Amino acid sequence: MKSLTSHTAAKLTATGLLVLAGSAQAHTGHDASSLASGLFHPLGLDHMLAMLAVGLWSVRVLPAQRAWQGPALFMLALVAGAVMGMLGLQFALLEQLIALSVVLFGAMLMMSVHKVPAMLGLGVVAVSALAHGMAHGAEAPASGFATYALGFLVTTAVLHFGGVAVGLGLQKFMARQAGAAVVTLGSVLGLTGLYLVSQV
Image (cartoon, rainbow, N blue to C red):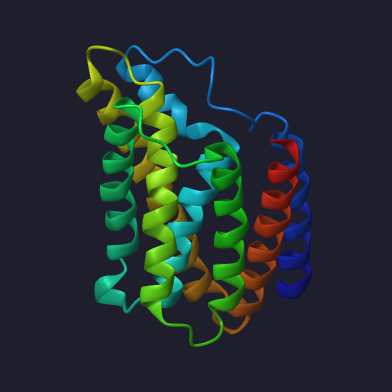
């Protein structure tokens, strides 16, 4: 019964992600002049999936007392990237890199069932967060950056918490199948990321 439920959930997740994928392109054209715009900006599919994945990965890979480090690192690098973006500094092929980060996080989730050095994953988290932050910062208002930044940090924290909650829920209610469930989620995430890359 549990495996059937897990399989059904995976199918529903995949369907939902593909339906939403069309809304995930681009970080241009958003209003970026208020707290509300900061709150809603991370809800693009690419940002949202990456942030959820960081929370889930942190629970899976980092020791329980250090699970906060993945989300904290992401948020610190996100702010640094936003400042860089506001100053006009960006990675080349930024949109492609952001979409690719979803693929990488999917791969990290799939590999989380094996012993992979946590520092490697944290490095990916930091670089990905810089890219996501640059996209936020490039659309930051000429004035009121702090309010806008507060908005996207609040939403980012909520998304990270959602990923952590999923990870803890899997450990508690699906302990024997948690690994398989995470691999399934990682593969769905990776495939969705590849689709996003193809749409950039």
